[in-house]
Length: 171
Image 1 (cartoon, one colour):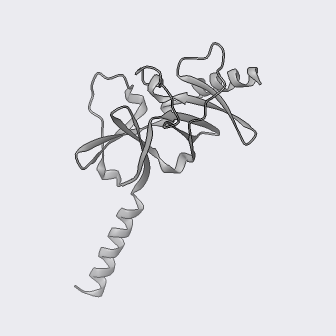
Image 2 (image 1 turned 90 degrees about the vertical axis):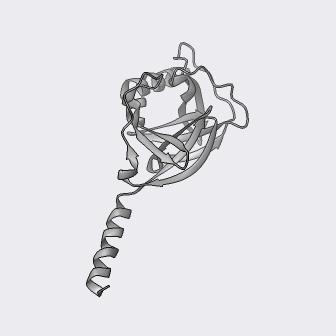
């Protein structure tokens, strides 16, 4: 291989790598989901929340994280799969959604997954509890499928404002 061909090949690999993204994977029941690692701010063990009156079922409550009141959303409930029976084994992932930080309650954090744009497949049109607006695609990993979530769709401005307003009223 000539030096020019080697440099071109190296450049193509570097370009392909620059298109790869990293995703934090987590579970809810038997299902595995992922979010872009760039929006993950922190991962905490479950320690309970302050419940909010008249909040939607998927708004678990609020926590005080270093002086900032943050809403905690139950992803299982948000997906219409029932409320999470939270224990010390559950995890809260703090996510940056637009200019807000929120927490999402999940069962476990699994791994950090690296995938190129080519590896992310479109979700097939099917009748599930999860709205297609919440899914960016599917990533096949070994024998399992990981659902890549569209967090901005899942927690749109209206949903966030309602939770933040409820939190402000109680504090």
